[in-house]
Image (cartoon, rainbow, N blue to C red; front, side):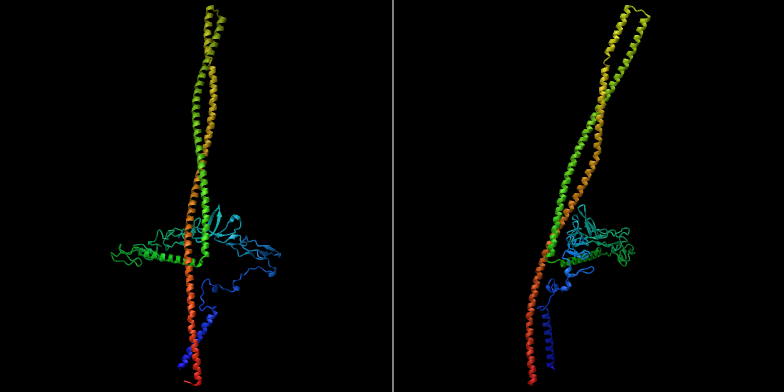
Length: 560
């Protein structure tokens, strides 16, 4: 009986040895076939499974009649070049539609970028499409699409993002899109926010709810306020404690003993800790997926290269903005100088106009006085003429009706001579008349000059609002340019910080790669030791085989 038991044990060991040997033979010479990621064993596939399948339309011509690469056969049977804008070398026979568009392009002729990518539309069809910088190209791209307008990139943000570059969360969401790994999440105020608002009101960064209603409080308005009890989340029935102003349990409403102090902040601490743990878990999962998707060298190097190109592009744009800023500043200085010159001209014209006006007033007054004097002289002349006519008529009268003696005639002649001398003495009023006319002409000329100066003054004054408006426009553009420069500087600083972080991660990945290599070497050593340890069971089995043969021979011979 003992021999039968021993024989069964030996048979079981023999079968086990055969299974081990067969597994070793089927493992390509490896006793323990480990499936290491990236190894040739795992990566080996059947060529029939990895071969590219072509989409065909209708009947394809035989292989001997197919066109060369980069050409397709038309319906007339001729070979025409593929029109894929340099983004593919394969197209369908018959239609000419492009296949396997490269450089992140799509379309029947690879003529547009994929969703979330942007190309250089100035040169027609894009030759290369890169992720939308909304706000960051690779690590934080939250745009459904983007396009260029007036030299700037305009982002079409996803539902929960907002801003020209999707750099902030939309109303009703919270988070920090500029922080790598952060996303915008919907505000959760347990339905206890203001119902008149379209979105729940919470802090756009932390997510803490503002203005909790229905007698609630907490980070998410998740519990009843002090002095109230009930269910703030589901039933939303927070009611006043019926304890005469004393404390009560926030859930059941049971009155608590006087002097019992409710825990202040403990529930909030628990909820804050829960939220922090949840955010930490999400961050760990995102970091884990990111580390698993990034290879030890190529992907990190590509990220660093893209980041360096982004930094170079931002620096170039910053230099262009600085040049524009300098040009605008020079233009504004020139405008200010022109405005000051115009103002000085206006003041000078105003002063000249004032002087001309004063001079014209003085000349007008003098002219009025001269005209008055001339009028008086004319009246005196008319009076003198009347007297002369009267004397003449008297002389005629006396000459006809009365006979005068020589003495009376001599007396009358003396009187006439005196009157004639007086008339001659008053004759210069004609010179005054000429002077008055000349001064009137000069006054008219001065008035016309004053009117011209007044028109120039009015024209210059009318230009002043236009110049001020242009100056305000330049100031607004200067402010926008300064803001754009500040944003570009912020982007450059963020890009440099990201570059440093990626460099640090690359070093960590290299260290992890070295540790993995060391672990693989340790595994190889362990495999060698395991192979050595299998030699002893093999020898033991051979000895057992010899013992069994000897025992069988003894049993057959009848020997003890």
